[in-house]
Structure formats: structure tokens, C-alpha cells
Amino acid sequence: MNTEDKNTENRKYRIFDMTWLEVKEWLQKTDTVLVPIGSTEQHGPHLPMGIDSFAAYHVCIEAAKQAQVPVAPLIPVGFSCFHMRPNEPGTITVRDETLFNMMYDIGRSLIYHGFKKIIYATGHTSNAPTMDRVVRAIKYDTGAIAINYAADTEVFAELCGDLIDGKDQLPGWHAGEIETSGAMLFCPDLVRFERAKLSLPQNPDWLPEGSAKKSGSGFQFYYKGYPVRAAFDQYEYSEAGVAGNPLLASKEKGEKIYARMIELFADFIRGLKEVPVEIKKREFPEMV
Ligand SMILES: [Zn+2]
Image (cartoon, rainbow, N blue to C red):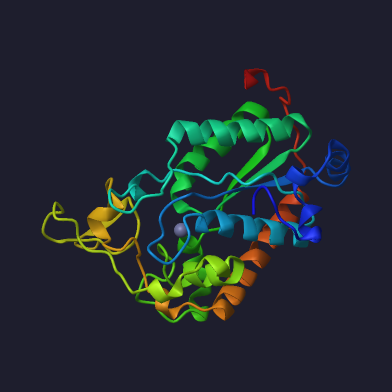
């Protein structure tokens, strides 16, 4: 997926597979580049640790082909501290500042070589707060346009409501209907569907009376209907590491949902490509 993709068409868009001559050719055609970022974190007993990374890569490579832009190597880890579960091993998390530095340095390297618009696309919602800081720092330090694009199911759930069945069962949350449908599309060999089961969040013991944990978010709950934020660990509110109903998933749904997501993303990229940008600082002296 990241280090290898045998699809010959995809290879033309992957900076990882190019020589500098091909990168130079791309720079004559466009100043826009995609940077996919995912996670390595548990997604219940039925999905692989890398599902957010598979999703980000799939959305980026397909949108890149439609919008004619190159794709930087995938960052396959993210901010996943609340998915560290004592009895369900495998999650790898990086600290906010590690993720910030990784994304920032990748952006600055691409700008050094002539790119002017850096579109980070995440398959994991919890990378977004760090990405907000990265795109702001890139803008202020270089003048480039940097974008924090959500290629994840939580955010997209609102835009594909007509394509899903479990509307009251957290379709876009962790390892639920949308995410499992996507996995059946782009990494079907890694889905252990026989282990999939419905699981919805429970209130952690310490929440005061009147509170409700209604999503798979590691950050948000409601108090008498009002949204409040805190730091949850997933094992406090989710028994199986799933928030939603994966039993409603299918490959056909995955195809429709992701086709819509990719088309929207490709339209956005095409629009951004046309915007003129002046870089005020291309050099990258902070690289050492
Ligand atoms: Zn996920």
C-alpha cells in the first residue's frame, strides 16, 4: 500500500516510485501535491490495524488520478493514544509534537522542491487537531496553501446518509458500517467479517448524572444534550473496540460511499489547483 502498489497506473502518481526526473515533470504540470496520513490502531476484532491508512491511501490515489496531481508517501501512524488498550495489543501511537514535526517537515520538503499547495488527507479523525496546527504553521512560515482534508468516515457520514442503513447506529464511527464497507472494497483479504458485531459506546463510570457518550470520539460527550469535551480512553466506553454496526457493511456500499468521497475530493483538488500562490520562503534551514 505505502511502500508497494503493483498497479502500474497508480505508480505514475506515487512520488515514492518516481525518480527526480518524473517529479520534475509533475512540477511542470502542477504545484499541488497530496499527503495521505492514517493510523495504526486497533479497529475491533474484524478490521486490520491499518484500516485508516488503507482508507487515506485509497482516497488519495484515486482522487489523484482524477485530478492529475502526485501523491507523497503515506504516513501510516497517527495520534492514537486513546486506542492503546491493555488487552487488545497492536496500536502504535505518536505524540502530537512527533506527528506535527513529521507532517511539517514533509510539507517543507515538498515546498522546497517547488510545490505550493500541500493537501494533507487523513483517514483518522484524531489527527485533525495536529493537522490544524501544521497547515497554519506552513502557511505562516512559507506562504504556501496547506489543507487539512478529512478523508475519514466520521466526517463523511453526514454526506452519505442515503447510502447507509444504520443511521441511528453511528455509521461513520470506529469500525462501523462505513469503515467496514470501505475495508471490504480496498483490503478485502484483511476483513474477518465472521468476527464483526454491533457495539455501541457506553457511559464511562466517572461521567456525572445527565451525561451521555453517544459517539466513538475519544474527546466528546453530551451533558443534558450539550456537547462537552474530555480525554477518554476507548476502553472506558467501548467494550469491543467498535462503535457502530459493521454487520450492515458490504463491498457495494463501500464502492458507492468511496466513489462519492473521491469525486468530492477530486473536485476540491481541481479547484485549488487553479488558485495562484506566491511562496515567500522556499528554503528549509530548519531541516537540521
Ligand atoms: Zn478508523
